[in-house]
Image 1 (cartoon, rainbow, N blue to C red):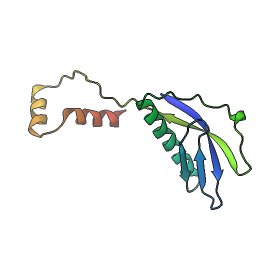
Image 2: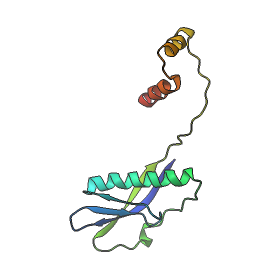
Image 3: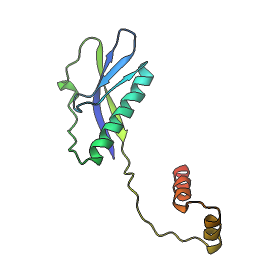
Image 4: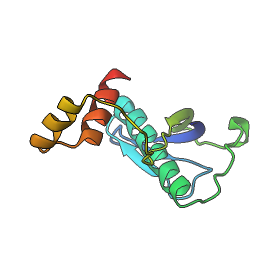
Length: 122
């Protein structure tokens, strides 16, 4: 599921950035430069959302940008996070007997191999 929230970027004296989310209490990050700040903003948003979704906390709606007040050394940017449902799902998979024997002999996890293959493919 995709989420988009406005973030406030504060330009610090040393040209680094502090990022806060007006709608998300405690969701704060920092970046050494603008590129790093954008990356860190997305990472902080993703972690904040994943934690609150996992704990079944209600997510606040994003503010309308025009309602957020900023100072001269601040600007607002929308940040997007794509949250994937990481819960395990049982599936029935058919493979040839000889392949299953080889997987067992090698001490491999069929689930792990399938996940890795699908991750590369997708």
